[in-house]
Image (cartoon, rainbow, N blue to C red; front, side, top):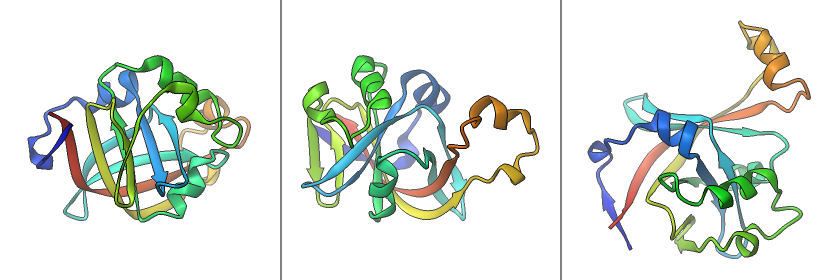
Amino acid sequence: MFKKIDVAELNDNFFTKFNKEWSLVTAGSESKFNTMTASWGGIGILWNKNVAFTFIRDSRYTLEFVDNSDCYTLSFFGGNCMKELVFCGKNSGRDVDKIKETGLTPVHDGNITYFEQAELVLVCKKLFKQPMNTDNFIDKTLIDKFYADNDLHELYIGEIVEVLKKA
């Protein structure tokens, strides 16, 4: 069971949440959605709004679901479900049924989907999207290190419109 909390009540360390615990980015309808693991991202203030910064590679199946939705969710599991998150990061929803394979339980609430096993869910309304471009990198070593295959990310900035915390 989840309860809605005000974003100002968050006291989580999102450096840990993204980098060590990871999250699932999920978008789509109840009848067809996809999710992927994300370990890069951030939380902040932009345009006087509470926002999440989400990065999705061009090659990821989830990208088309996020592109075709007004909102997406970030589900955080508090370090639990790491085996499931590894699976969702290494496998494409084009090829496998991630829900069947992981046993994760989707929760559908209107136009959003998140997971019963999550401890924290951020519902994000898309505000901005921009593709990364190698011309914009100041530190060109990052291109060779992270984008040798030219599979760059799309940056999404989403307003955090709802925060759900496991009750």
